[in-house]
Length: 173
Image (cartoon, rainbow, N blue to C red; front, side, top):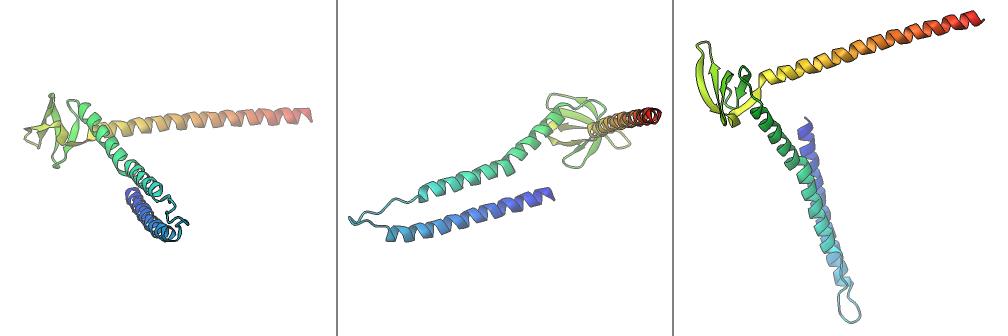
């Protein structure tokens, strides 16, 4: 959903920039025709600068919306493929599910099926490490539970302090 919105936003921005460039071109041509001096020389217009700025803006948008996120995904995939361990459950880009039996330099041997067939595949063909994702989810859940338990004790401490304050106010009266 986010990706579709971003791509449509980029498309709208590029369309608007090209339309504004065409409008500036038409305006500049009209000014150039009317902007001749008494000696017959034309006054310079800022058309070239505006065109260059719009092209630079388009390339900057393209970099931040397409190239940079793609490089980030490639880096994450490479890190995942380099951190494979024996016993991890993986899914290949072809849809084969298996457990890692042996890890080599650029290949991995996996066991698949109930009969434990072994397949040798390239690391680049691994799309997902299910075991690592499960570990990450467990770590997040553990961190949340630690924060929640810390929050509960803090609330209890606040309640105790407020009770002490009420008792001291009652004693003062």
